[in-house]
Image (tube, rainbow, N blue to C red; front, side):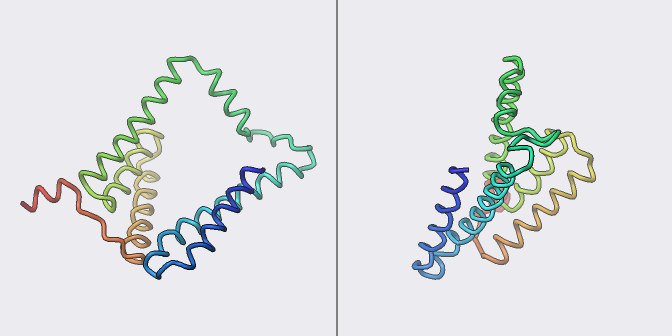
Length: 161
């Protein structure tokens, strides 16, 4: 709970501190601080609820806390741990390459859809739906609303000559 409180204080301080910046300079810190503050408050609320639950902090059936999740991960065979680590690193590398080749606005929905279909084995409908929703959200917020000028990917620069 102390860590959650520290995050709330950190993001609240960043939000207050960003108010003294010029209008264009404060936009990015405010967006990050608001999102971080909201997530930290949700986490703090969950921690408080867990501490004040009638079961005396015991987890609900089917809900694993961080300690239980770590125990489960530690009980995996070494080969499974390596395989999962390589898979995570592979997806991170795929994101970096996709952003470099295609640019952020195209890489986000493509990689979200690819991960959901190939990595999480979701249905085509769910994968495509979430990919389109993420792409629309990303484009709407960062390209249209905030007007961040993203570079074209290397692939498009090569095609344009």
